[in-house]
Image 1: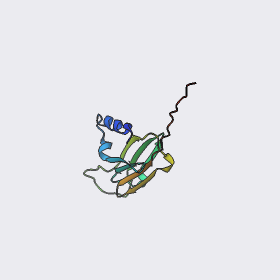
Image 2 (image 1 turned 30 degrees about the vertical axis):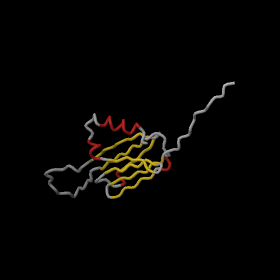
Image 3 (image 1 turned 90 degrees about the vertical axis):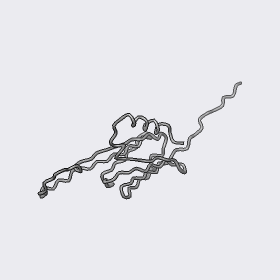
Image 4 (image 1 turned 135 degrees about the horizontal axis):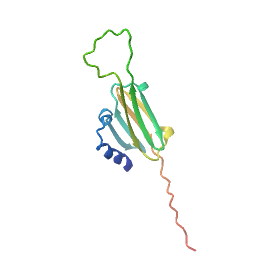
Length: 128
């Protein structure tokens, strides 16, 4: 079962006008002891993407800077592809941060995030 924090984070996103959510659409599911994130990030190369993990929070950010070409003699009528920056974060809780795998193929980022096994810390106390 996915952590309730993921759904809560998503619930909060609905209250914001979040263009990143529209740009970085994703599916998150659990399979074989891993969380799997499939995210569409069209137009970005792997050099433009940064993935950070801190205490179970995965932050995916993308930044594409304007290419300066001084020999460019074009007269633009519209220019929308100059600079883009976006990011999304998800709280997965207790995960194996050192074993996360990431792959970018044709504008789709795939993360495989291994979950930590839960240790039962409950202990019965014997009454004397």
